[in-house]
Structure formats: C-alpha cells, structure tokens
Image (cartoon, rainbow, N blue to C red; front, side, top):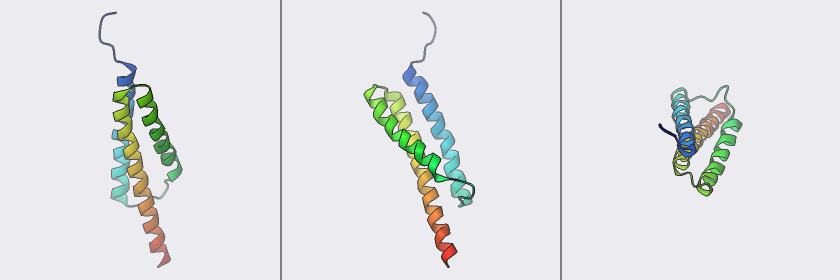
Length: 97
C-alpha cells in the first residue's frame, strides 16, 4: 500500500488530545465565571474515571501516543472537576452567611 497511513495509536491520540484542548476551554470558562450554575459534576467525574482506566488500557495495549494524550484529557477533566468542587464549596459557604 502506498501513501500515508496513521496508526490506531496516533488516531486515538488525536481524539484524546483534541478532547483535552476542548476541555481546557471549559476550565477557563469556569474560572472566569466562578460559577457552576447549570453544570452537574457527575458526567465529568465519569469521564475522568474512564480516563484513568484508559491510562491503564493504553499501557497494556502499548499505545504510547494515546497514553500521553489520554493523560492530558484525564488531567484536564480532574482540574475542571476540582474547580467545580471549589466553586460549589465556596457558593455553599456564601449561602450560610
């Protein structure tokens, strides 16, 4: 076969890396608004947990590019979830006063 072929590892890494870039937009948005209105934590927690599983899976399947890109999306999901928890606790404290 002639031409350029992209391995499944690189293809998966492009999806994971693209997801990390988009999730950074969510991190920046929640930091700017300092608000969690209309946002539920469970979907991001689910995808963060799935990301942790993917890190194990990519190692076992010897997919180094997907592993590093998967690490990026997992970390950005955890950062976003951390922001959500922080602003939820902060909102709860301001409601008590």
